[in-house]
Image (spheres, rainbow, N blue to C red):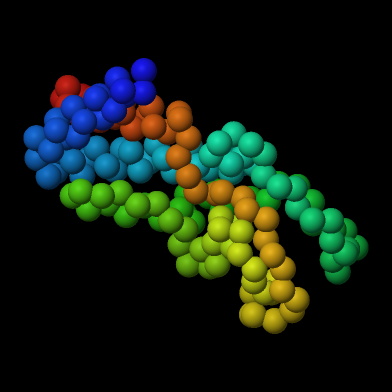
Length: 153
């Protein structure tokens, strides 16, 4: 089965190369839209690309309001305005824009960093939570979009 998928991917790569640059850009934009939507839904579900749950938020001291942080993490990160999709004729990249990148990067890579935005406060080693990544469903969606473009849909 895996060899069949590799053969299909090679065939699709050849077919996509036969598309005009405009058709490739359109296909990549559709793929970027599908990946952005899928990523937002996955972040809302608090899941890594492999389907495992995010490491839960650390129980902290109460904030000024008297309540510790609660609810899902990355509520605003999953919004479309923070997901940056860049497309050129041969490539699609998805990343976070501006300050959202500062929040997402330590979680994505499991880095150690300062807790406060201004670089002050204690350091903390963030557990790895993959906010960006490809699921099997994403791969299927990309293949479907590529096939649709080759068919002329």
